[in-house]
Image 1 (cartoon, helix red, strand yellow):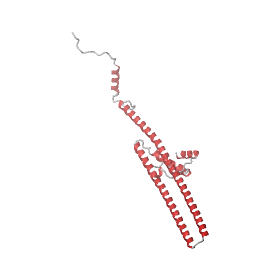
Image 2 (cartoon, rainbow, N blue to C red; image 1 turned 180 degrees about the vertical axis):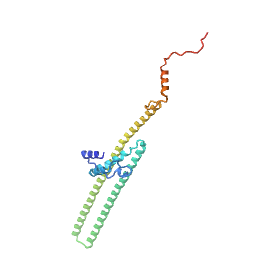
Image 3 (spheres, rainbow, N blue to C red; image 1 turned 120 degrees about the vertical axis):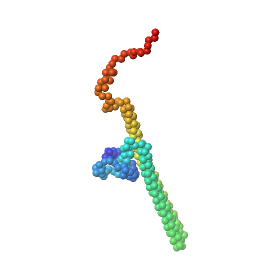
Image 4 (cartoon, rainbow, N blue to C red; image 1 turned 60 degrees about the vertical axis):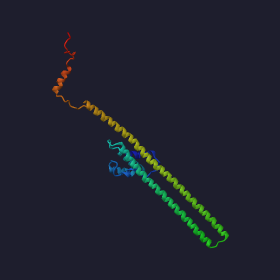
Length: 244
């Protein structure tokens, strides 16, 4: 199945941004694909990272339905638990990235303002001329404008990339949920069909129509029963006394 998905991925050349989160990462010990490990390792070396993760995710989802007697509600509960754990982990990662960016942004802004203040004080302490002051403050305004413009551009780039990666992550989870729901509906149909088969078997068994069930009569008694059933049927003889 891994090889098939790999070939399909190459044919369609999908451009989906890879999210470095895998269901298999969360359940690596409990849900591993049952394949020959040596051959699989050889194949995996040739499979792109994104396709490899998708195969592992598919293996995890399909493995949830291995036990045909398992309650559907428990399967969905386990899937939702895994989804929520992955979402919480990635949300925390996104938050840390944004907090780090804001801290760095604030640090650079504070340093810039402090350096500008220091340069201004050093300059004014030298009792410069009016022309020098005019030139200095024009240069200071230019530097300040360039700094904050550059910082704004960096902030916009970060926010744009941040929102795009969040959308990619949401799409990633949605694709896995869609895959699970498709398999879940199929699983419900399989359970319903299995239930019907068991009900039909129980009904046939209760009527003794299942083949292979031995008759409780001996061959001799079966012969007597057959002769009895072949006796011609005649009107019943009334034993009531005739009325005078």
